[in-house]
Length: 136
Image 1: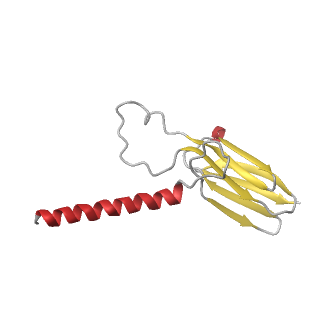
Image 2: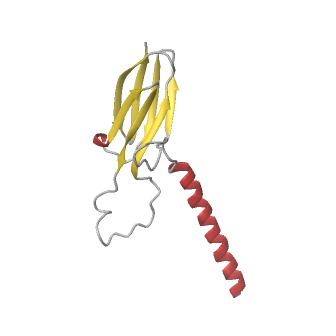
Image 3: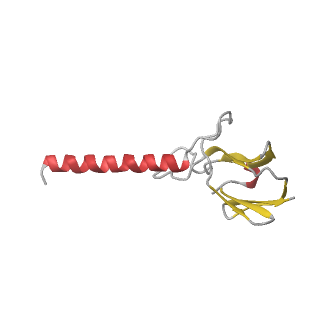
């Protein structure tokens, strides 16, 4: 393989990696709403509605329940908190080879229907926060 071919191959791989990094940035590190305090990323959510409930499922891998705050006000539910890096990762001499799961402050604000709702329960299990709202 000639030097020119090798340079072109390296350049193509570099561009491919930059493209992948940009896709991950768009997917996981979307800024929270304006005015959010230091929010770095928005967790992905699924919302399911039945005739009497709304179920919100929020992906929060590695987030401790004590780090999550859920508020319902002004016609919206807001999920905020922080995902911290594991303590062993923060020590000197630890090399990070891949960091794809976002960390730092997060916030996600979801508008709710205008009808009255009541929070029936919430549970953080298996890396997902489930919030159940009952229609009144």
